[in-house]
Length: 266
Image 1 (cartoon, helix red, strand yellow):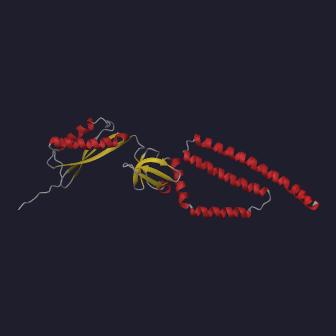
Image 2 (cartoon, rainbow, N blue to C red):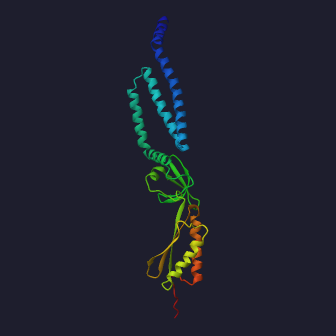
Image 3 (tube, helix red, strand yellow):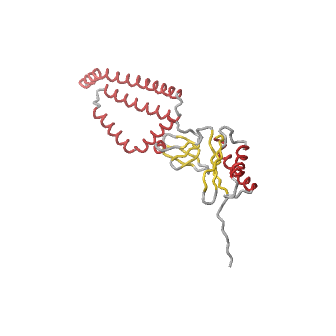
């Protein structure tokens, strides 16, 4: 019995300093990791980093620092870490290969949140889809289409493709094209268009509306009617000018050519 007690005492005296030092490193390490994470969150808040990205980055920083702390503690206890690090590296490589699609989406989400090509509430067109941005998450972006369908686009593909943001600018140009008969008087037709766009309350005076003859087509004279409005009023102006122009042309006796079908009776 005395032999075992002596052996235990010898081991305790030999390893106690390393164990105490390892525990001290662990406790102080956890304290400083929490301090660093809190500081990083404050810095990201001041930099207006997206809430979702801020949480993910702070969690990722915590995982990395805690992994380094565990390796340091194990090393202090005298455990060989070469094979341990190799195992972690191999596992990380395997996980990375298995999740490369998800990692690409994460990287894309991070880029979107950092560079902000669009924000929640913007109307965008990308990846063959268009709608109002409902949410920007770390792996996907959700759109609401005009007929209220939800579209989920992976951020990896979204960040590597062309994005049309219709909400960025304060003003948008409304482009309309009208074709009238060759019998119509050009000046009179342009006056009809001008009366509508110059008197519409939602059309801006600066830049001024533009009306030009663009084409002498096979069966019509084509005009482009271009006016500017605030982005929020785009569709209102588009539909109202379209409707008012048809009514005004009819009133002025200016024909809009269209295919006719003639029934022949024998």
